[in-house]
Length: 317
Ligand SMILES: [Zn+2]
Image (cartoon, rainbow, N blue to C red; front, side, top):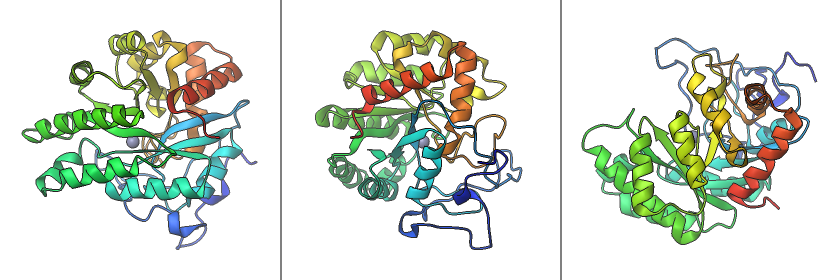
């Protein structure tokens, strides 16, 4: 493998781009070509990293979400990840189309488990159309698929949602907690600028047996709360960002039996490729960054993450 190139499926070859199994290449949403500051992003996928010595799982990806110059199918995405030691993934739905996509993807590739939900920023949109109840009923029905192991991403987002919609968001979070508990599924939390209320509502409702803080964004205090409650902390590429000292401190005090890794791809591409498209094959950059922060042996950290992921979601077999 040439370390300077992205995996074959992610290389831009012609104007059409390459699609392998097009029926399930993200055709719905496409990540914006500009960043939040309005700067144009570079849309080539980063080079493939050196393979990991022991395989790990990307426990949060959105294969339905297109980015970059090429559309990549589910199997090709997982092949590219597997080639660098990321042998499995959890595909996450955020609304009805992406949750339906999730269940379809589970049926075509056994390297996937799934999670389905109405995202905290989407729930108010369904409510505004008077469709929240019917949408949530469909989420619950999709969640009965045996390979859907998570309800998520759900939670609170005080960065993008404001005003009256926040009450709907909090109600939606409570309803998702209830579904996770009734179906015995893992709760996958989206928490943006809302740590205190997320923890408060989990306490009020009674947390499900397994809770994952997806893209952990807290400080040492929240890490301690997770440790006390046995909640999982899933670290994304953000832990490698230059200004993320608080995340690295949280990682060092996190219970080692509760640490997971994810991409949240196509978002949150790890350093030094921040802003470029992200995909599950990029996980090794993040895991190596975590091993460095922890002063841990890479193979041991990978084994630990592998075991933790099965503890969080159950077996892939
Ligand atoms: Zn996500």
